[in-house]
Image (cartoon, rainbow, N blue to C red; front, side):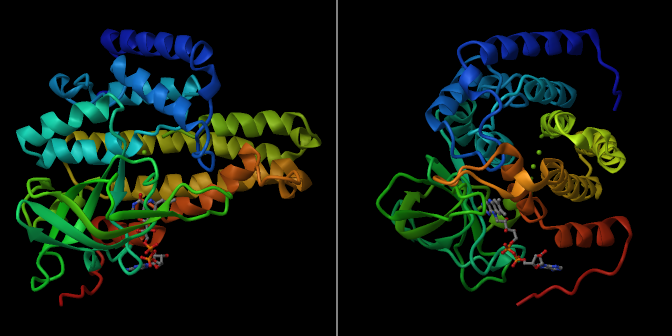
Length: 384
Ligand SMILES: Cc1cc2nc3c(=O)[nH]c(=O)nc-3n(C[C@H](O)[C@H](O)[C@H](O)COP(=O)(O)OP(=O)(O)OC[C@H]3O[C@@H](n4cnc5c(N)ncnc54)[C@H](O)[C@@H]3O)c2cc1C
């Protein structure tokens, strides 16, 4: 990949920067810098309005083709947009699962009818999506999903439990991995259903997290229904669909940490200064890792770079959370009496505990690197 910016890329950057700066210092100033890790609960209505304004100006789903609401943007333009978004203090995106996970999956596996029906509503911010993969006994071992779907005329009837379902309480739709053939081997017999969330057969129970808020949920399906055609890919071919996959920038958090340090004696403490410099270097390495991973994706290669990138950024971000606490010193351990309202640095620290779990735990990423990059023997697989 040629990493130099073309004149078109430079003018794309200027257009994105101008739009974002205008909006985030004007009508949408209230959401600037909000809704990030541990702050996802805040300003839902305002952030949904932001999502829709982004959609109306075609600043969501940049990679989608024009006819489905996107811009047909190149990978480099997407990187440029996310850099500008972070620079302008763009808020945590409510539509992230639609844009980052289900949208690309529909593009790849969907029928033309499914693309026309679902993608424009993801791009416009009309439909919010959540991901129904994990279950109490199926996390890393995802092929063990037990939620089942049975045909009843023109519909699938779904029964079972999902867990850790981010944003389910806001979602209009969920993509749900279901067992549709109980007699088939584990990886077969699973289908990828698109299920409307607002119906009587679905109960959502928030899980209160360390941050005191609830970003994810338990979701119980008890006779929930979806149309028989709302399967992505082949019936019983959901495993292949689920294996496609996911990321943002931590630069602003480091700026906040540095500014906090400057206000205390820590700005002259050599160890703190070294750690801040180390974090700055880490961010640059992360960027090159990301570009390397994008390059292999652009070539259509499935390489270990993505696993290396995930492992690197998750650990980097956890260490950044620890640095934020150390810079705060004893203040890090104090919250105001009254409601459990944490500071951004405290939220960062607590939320980043999850970074090495979601999107593939560290151990699983190391398995992938070991097997695919280093050629180590495969982990024994359960075939039953
Ligand atoms: C913030 C957050 C948001 C999430 N959002 C969603 C969501 O929206 N939708 C959804 O479906 N899921 C979501 N998840 C769930 C996430 O995908 C799972 O937590 C993850 O897949 C790990 O599964 P598990 O929690 O069941 O842990 P387990 O799979 O039980 O793993 C427990 C531990 O054992 C290790 N381990 C497991 N297997 C192996 C192995 N073969 N070799 C070595 N070590 C192993 C793991 O690395 C981990 O340390 C979210 C999780 C978090 C933390």
